[in-house]
Image (tube, rainbow, N blue to C red; front, side, top):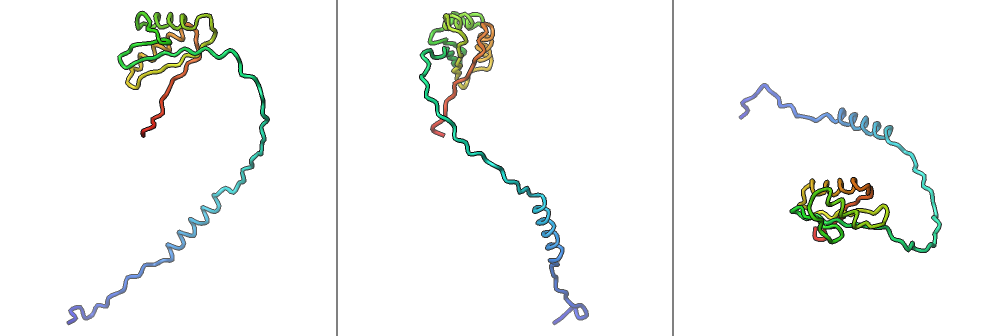
Length: 140
């Protein structure tokens, strides 16, 4: 039985013309905005140099800082953990060497202030070459 006699069902159609128009505009925009520049590369053959290794290696002072704020300067603990005593320990470790490199080995849980104290001590004695030792996580 047809209860809707006078009504005809219209079939729904999706009009694809606007979709095609939009896609063509997008393609044209992409083609026009793309840069087709060719990056030139230089083929450079660097010269090799043979030189003797220098006999005098740069002076390296290692400063170890643990999580509780204890310091070791080249394996020796300063008398106290103040900036002045760390600076004195750095001067003693450098001896007569000029421009030593300070390597800071800080524990991951060390406070920032402990590391800043080492940097301040290096600044007090005019040692400007400071670097930090890191460890690569092999297990991750």
